[in-house]
Every structure is written in C-alpha cells, then in structure tokens.
Image (cartoon, rainbow, N blue to C red; front, top):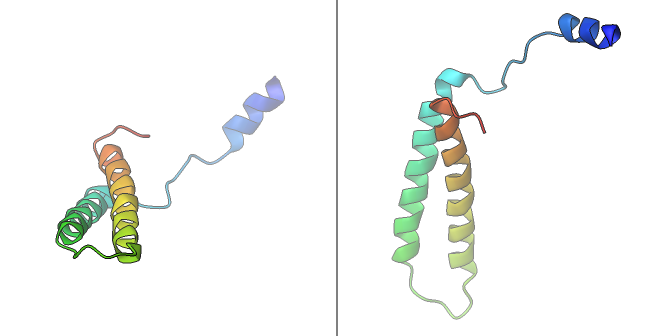
Length: 79
C-alpha cells in the first residue's frame, strides 16, 4: 500500500492534450459545422443510392458528438 502512495505522489499531474481555454471555440466550430451540414443534408436531392447523403449525415453526426463533448467540458462537466 505504501508503494502505491509513493508512486501516486511521484507522478506528474494530468495535463490535457487540448488546452482547456480552447474548448469553447472548438465546441462552437464543431457545432456550427454540424448545423451547416444538417441544413445541407436537408436540401440534398434524393438519390437512388444515398451514398452522398450517408456521408454527409455521418460527418455531421461525428462533428456533433465531438462538439457536445467539447461543450460539456468547456462548462466544467468532464465526460
């Protein structure tokens, strides 16, 4: 048990890869891109093979996921 405490005390504190001060800007950019792609998706012509629709929807979904996580982290809810 003492070795675990000593190891914990000797380790450096956690520092995130992305600076915390940039999180609101990252969240705004990602979520604005999501809304832009959602508008673009709603105006696409309907194709018989929806490859372009799927690509736009997948991109918007990924951007929304990372944008919401960045938004939560920027307000102090670390998920």
